[in-house]
Image (cartoon, rainbow over all chains, first blue to last red; front, side, top):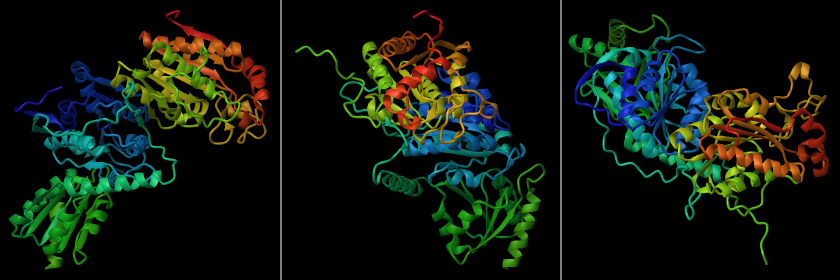
Length: 360
Length: 247
């Protein structure tokens, strides 16, 4: 299913996700309509069947995530997408997929909550995404795009990481990134070396071992051994796969940190601060799990003041505080999600000035 | 000496955890015989559900996916769409299929997924200790209906074979029982027909098997068998409710 092209095109973030899925060889998509991500199922309902893939509009988010489980167990690349209320419903299936060591890509175009909330941008599902979200104690890979280009690139990466580490991978976007249009280069699928899927259910032929995809471990010590195995895998992820972006951090006396759409606004505010002669930088985590702890620790060896900015009352700040040196301060500026709460660059610039002066 | 009876190849040579007198073992055997007789074991993917049927992979010598509670038809949908060349069946109990999984079964059936669903109805939640199920009979006492199922508050038992037969997506729907040699022979025929539908790519097939649960009914196996005759079959009549291709 090659759809990659070197041409620049002008598309919505959600469409870029769908295009990346096709280029990544996603064979099955299962979804349920919910704003602000419905462009993804709409695009794939049109394009996937033409390329020989399967599109199903499921009866519910629960149906969709379990179809993803089944397709993944059968060995194909598959994806689902939703937003907060739907992602909550999918948590049961995500937990089972994590427990069954199944790959699979889940796109969460965050909207405001709790409950029905609203359709405006939010980053308040950071905890739900990075802490596992469902029952039992597990983590999934979480990637946070900040542009339409990254919606494409990180969706592609999510498929590879998910296959390599045999765990679900989530693209954690928000309605700003999902709905805005930018120019994007839809590059070809990278030639990643992937492990053979010798664990899939395929029909047990004579002489071949029986393959079982399951999460039930009743034997003495079995469940504990599973958890330690996954713990080691999470460490491997942290050692190899952390990704982040730094802007003007080399001489920074204050480092603003933010992910996703908020980091775009923060980047403008940082540029305003630089223009005003202030030594301010930006640290943007791209992988939220694994969280780039070592990168924060390294930055905090020199810079002792961080300003965490989120479209929530503060969730990622816990990870930032756990990562920086003990003598580094982490200030916070956040706005709970909802209509009208997206901060302006000027607003963030004011926060930068306030914290910068206080430190001086 | 000529061997006249043996274990089907699709079943492993192990003893099961099922209680004495439970009909799960009989249903397992009949499904395994059908897989053997069509020669499709090496193409088959089973989908286990939650409850007494969860250990499907321990008894069937086929590849198995273990589904979350009630979600087997959605998991089977994903597997079949990913691998349309495989034979995919689910094996579910009454709580799994007709309570928590009602949405998944109705919609998989309505889409006409090319899968086979084996539904074991024993009017109770077996694994969790005999609670009221969506198929618990009116007046039946269980650990969560200690005064008997009150249909004015709990509703009436679902008749799944009839209910599903009303959907255009369903190609074959039948109810069978395992409580007599005659019924077992007929169940074998029906289960084989259900798989024939999938082998011949003729659409969604559904088998409801009335089964005993002596442990949770508080009966010995013979009395439990008799209860299937006296109480279950009158409420859940045996028969073929849909057979679109006349197989």
